[in-house]
Image (cartoon, rainbow, N blue to C red; front, side, top):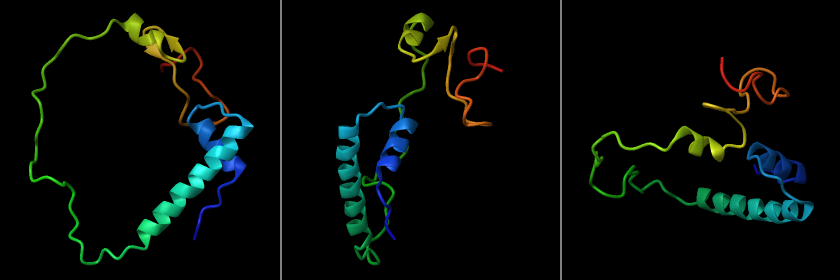
Length: 110
């Protein structure tokens, strides 16, 4: 069972990623996606029955740094790089409700 990589699929993935791509890039990405899926299919054919599953390659566990507060960037500097902002908030696409409504009214907050 394979996934058919179409122009529409590539454009949909680009739209979800908020990327603007040209027709030439669609063709290039379609070929990249096909190669990636072929590689994954080849990996799925490997016999791993006798391979011991391991979550970590190293024996170490719980290697964390101390959780200590540090200096933060000023809100204005952080928001300057946001595609949309309504200080002091980021404006983000709606993920619940009608998918055609891109952004919350009023700039980002309940």
